[in-house]
Length: 230
Image (cartoon, rainbow, N blue to C red; front, side):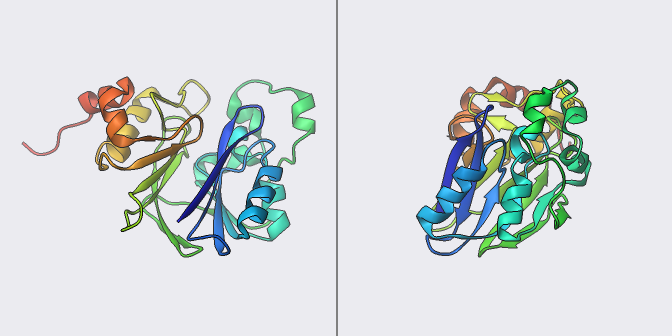
């Protein structure tokens, strides 16, 4: 398994390129602000052919390079329908002006082939299987992508801005909701094995076990999660 990640742009957003191995097809996750060159360099270094772009949510720092990245390779992009509007109206999504100068540097809009993600979907792309979990709270259309455990690697969760090492995504922007965020943490993250590797939208990698033991937000999610059964 090959997972190459790099922080891109003004927000240091992690973009990931995932493939079964070097020289094969790949999936690009969250090509955000100024990610185009990093994507091109990663593809060239590992001799990869992209077949899809998948997005954890619609904030500008995660999607700003979607149009050029998709256009360069003629590949589709996937996003949850509740965040689709953010591709064409990033200022509305952020609830504040991000500056006319910055907007002028970006290619705002939808790629030619845009598809919608659904909760529980299984994406089979580039020889990979990624399960989709709708995880609102940071945005209404936030999702995570999880790859199952294999003999070679533990399960991997691409958490977007749901869960970070030691923290979580903010919930004070339009579409954010702190109660929904806690519910998503409880439903999506807490049931996972401690060995699950978490690759988030910002910051270093971590594991579910480490966050279960030390992340106060995941602890609060466990306390507030509704109990099942008697």
